[in-house]
Amino acid sequence: MKKEDLRIVYMGTPDFAVESLKRLVEGGYNVVGVITMPDKPMGRHGSVLQPSPVKQYAVSQGLKVLQPEKLKDEAFVEELRSLQADLQIVVAFRMLPEVVWNMPRLGTFNLHASLLPQYRGAAPINWAVINGETETGITTFFLKHEIDTGEIIDQVRVPIADTDNVGVVYDKLMNLGGGLVLKTVDAILAGTVKTIPQEALVKAEASELRPAPKIFKETCRIDWGQGVKRIYDLIRGLSPYPGAWTELHEGEGLAVTLKLFETEKMFAVHSEKPGTVCTDKKTYFRIAVSDGYLNVLSLQLAGKKRMEVADFLKGYRYAEGSYVG
Image 1 (cartoon, rainbow, N blue to C red):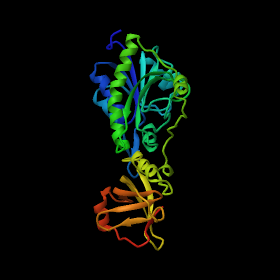
Image 2: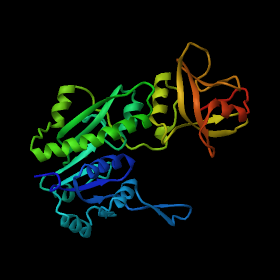
Image 3: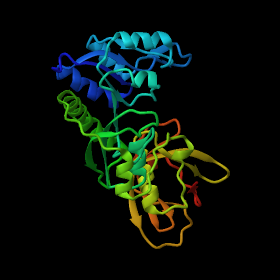
Image 4: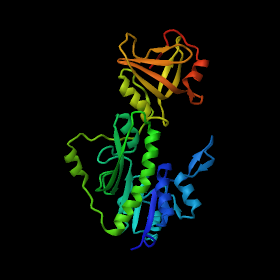
């Protein structure tokens, strides 16, 4: 079968999923339908509906778009079946019911932003950086019942530099993911796929599996009782979004929320209490921890824009005894 004859249904929602869809379209593959999330209400009263990045691209290319509220809805399932897909591809979408993922004759494969079986879950890129990993990657695998556990088709490994934040790693994986999706489709077409059960990799690695659960507001709160490296990795693992945060206490019971986006590690022996603010009020703003300091380079006050630390200090009224926590 030629790629022009292979009927593909593509499923995805955010920017991360646009790149792979774009590669398929520009590569001349036959995308017969795109499934994405319903438009999101925006604005004060939710009166403006914002289409997903995947929908925006699909519409610009004249592709058929379906936006089901519920994936088990009979009307949606019938419409999906009418597309007669040979293969379904999932990139950053929702968990699919069996009636959906088991529909195409060649199966459904997913592109996941980690080296499975590590970092199964909703936020694999964030957690790899938060945990100080020096390597991550992307994986294509066939879907089965349990989330992110299907047999692996292919993987690409990617180094994580000590200065990379989640935004940098996200872009690397997004671009490489587009290429891996095409490579996987071509291997399926050629009948050359040799899958590997994840259980075999778990045994081979003989290591503890690290999960990648959804990130909540409390996940992002900085614990100043931890050391320099742990806090540094948390901040870059949440930068630029959603952002690691803390409360800046300026005396007299005043506190303001502060997001930190970029810091430097400064290992040192000192007698400061963890969370103590150290600053010359002009050029540096450092926060003491048990084994040194976090030198803050860019940050954001609640209700303000992100700024460099020098700009922040111009308007910051430093009070002796200021601390974060």
